[in-house]
Length: 123
Ligand SMILES: [Zn+2]
Image 1 (cartoon, rainbow, N blue to C red):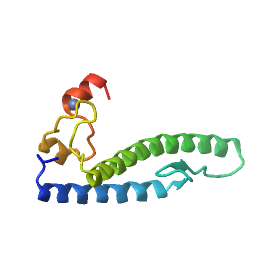
Image 2: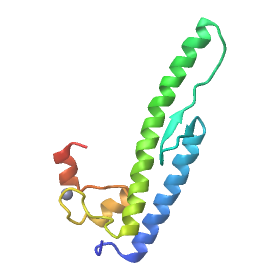
Image 3: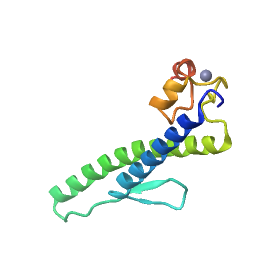
Image 4: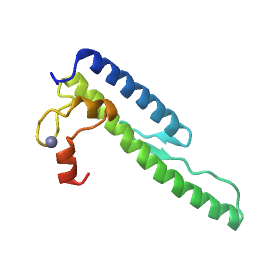
């Protein structure tokens, strides 16, 4: 990650940590942590026993599950990026090993792939 200046890395780390805290806060609002690291399960909300209540509970739970999945995946990406910062291989494409341009890393600090590989892998 020689292509990223130390002061840029400091900014990126700050961004990642802030993002991590925000995601954890959002997840805590409707889900709980499981025993696994950075894994959450959406909470089921009990609204009542009428058919209407039950239908709403299921709908709400499905929405929560979908949101939980998105937030959790993002959180895991952020945590992974922080780990790569520690290890010193941050900013290198996990597919081709090339340096990812600093503009991309600043705009999307949790990027693990260069644009070309991301398109190739369709991720
Ligand atoms: Zn690549």
